[in-house]
Amino acid sequence: MTKRDFIDSCNFSQAEMQYMAELGLKLKAAIEHGYYPPLLKGKSLGMIFDQSSTRTRCSAEAAMTELGGHALYLAPGQIQLGEGGHEGLADTSRALGDLLDIIGVRTASQEDVEEIAQNSRVPVVNFMTDDDHPTQALGDLITIKEYLPEGKKLSEVKLVFVGDATQIAVSAIYLCAQMGMQFVQYGPKSKQMPKKVVEKAQKIADKTGGTITLSEDEAVLKNADFIYTDVWYGLYDQELNKDEYMKIFYPKYQVNDELIAKTENPNVKFMHCLPANRGEEVSASVLEGEKSIAWEQAANKKAAMRAVFVYLLNANFATDADSIKIASQYQSELQEILEQRP
Ligand SMILES: NC(=O)OP(=O)(O)O
Image (cartoon, rainbow, N blue to C red; front, side):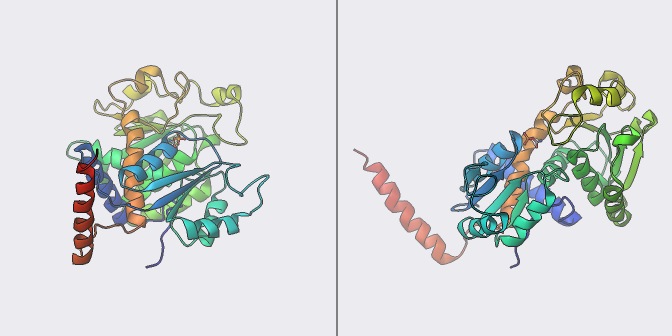
């Protein structure tokens, strides 16, 4: 079977995204009830992190552990790759592909992730670049499905992304296009989604029935089912400083109680990829309020990681007679010695 990579939020079809979200929900339910399916037993994930991360790193590592696998954190300076190292991207990817079962990468350059995927014989997962954050998109889909407005289908959902066209906004526009949802970016003209992103998303939306709107007009907030935002500055390279960003976005694009009221939807939910800057892109009252599902969204990053790893590794339970016989033989021998503990 040809290996698959998850390096672009549009890599997988609507059916595959739906499937992975359902798989993520099933695995989540099993684990919440105490059953840890050993679907990744013996599998190793290499995690190349060029930038810091809390949620992506910890969710990937914990997901591997819970499903019986193992994750290796490969920070700058710990492997031969990078500044001061002795090996380039292509050779490192080749070596890691021969040693490990799957690779995750967080780095600024989307092209670097593509190069790793080209040179490695194992699946590669984009753990965020400046251009996209596909595992965030899948986690967001899982969260949206969990909080789907009563009586609505996914294709009837309206998601309004408020503020800057960050890579989180890009993964959200691709997700909405892929799932046939209504996507709106409510943000200042100078910070709206680049043309090439909109064209790519529109091409997909034309097939799925999704819609895409970019606007500075607050009227677009009306009837939103989900209001989503991200930080305005400070996380990524070559960005403006805080004063410059505040001038562009504040106060119009801060998600606060007043902005939420403009949706005129009492059941609207608030999403944030986190980390958040209270008092800037979101007020503390909204982030911690009853409409916020940002913390559940963060927890669902692990649901997404489990599903992506199981899907890409084509993991399955051993069901053939030989495997069952071997497992049962070793299980009883091990049980015997465990009971003989002096
Ligand atoms: N949302 C997200 O990707 O968080 P981290 O940067 O902490 O991984």
